[in-house]
Length: 306
Length: 283
Image: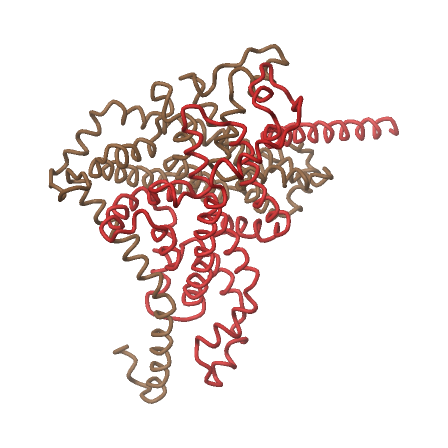
């Protein structure tokens, strides 16, 4: 503002209008600013403080330094929860992503007609209230009469106990994750539609088959979309709560004790608010690191492409 | 030559057929749980628990639905859910349209940086704020009321702000410039010029807000406390955690909870898809 005093009058009115606009603008955004301070910034700050305290809701928080963090890494269940969550991120997220991409590339095949009803079907599971989805999947995964094992039985395989088996409970959750990937499919399809058909035509002339076209054209050009979907999925896995809470309560023998479920238990079953806050902060940091690394990896690929 | 072409055609047709088959199998796998839900809701418990699995009820019964409406206070749960849903929709429409307008069509210093903060809050895990909010709400005696699930909805939601802004940025400046020169105040421009042409994005926000609160589980679980305030989702989970859950009733309740969303989806499909694709565009 100070520098612009040369063209005196015009600048004056200009800046007054601008100042008016700025004031109005801030007024419009005011609800967000208040909400951000009260419902986001203040809680983040106090969460950090609580994480350094022994706090059981009743009574005042007692400052104990980094003890919560130290204790967490000695906590057997916490380590188990980290491992389970890592399993879902390292196996569940890639499997789900690959399935979603494969399905959308197939759906996007222009020569294939009559697929619009399939899009609707793939999307519908995302509309189901999570709790109902969980109730359903308890049945789908039922050892004796569940849908999955019934089908496995038809082809002569005796299916595992799924949710009651320490080995198969997590794969069961991955199947459920795939079942709700309809959002991602919609986003991938939108991304695929942005790719110029000329590229495929050229590849066709060069004799590239459908699979080659998918790997060399579709997937590289979908990269930003894949990044977005994977980041969303990973954050989702960190926050995964309702499914294990309702379907397994973390069992059998902590095989489905995921990060957020344990956090919830610490906070609202054992009322260890400080301990749970420390967990939340570790989660925030780890999630941020993963996201940053993923952005780097995907960006690196971009420059490589030229 | 002729034989070669038809051979190629046969191969293409076969490949397409195979592709269709794979997709069809996937589609069936996705839809089967619903088939189970629907048929299960008409099964007697002996059919439901029958081993091996019975595809269709041997005896159709409406008892399960009758139980939903008589055995549990269904309408109270529905009313509670609707209170939360409706207030959230109202809050989302009012707050996010105002905020989105402020970010999209008015210039103020630091605007774009602040908008980056809005975007950043989208990836903030709610667990980080959940515990302090719980403590805060306990102190102001909001725990055990609907307020923790309603009030924040009136202060904007990062994703909805993003949607609104994307839409409003796309409206040409000329539309508002003349009104501004005529001296109309900003709120009038917002209300009389911009809002009427923003119906598509408002519909998307309304629907997504509806879906969020209709599906929400953790919020009600942490903040509601008393049985009198339970939402449908929370009630369903409590019924499930009984020692001997009444599964027939639960499946019927599941159908009742899914049905309104499905109807809404088939009527307003466009707006559902719009919101999701717009989230992906940002990348």
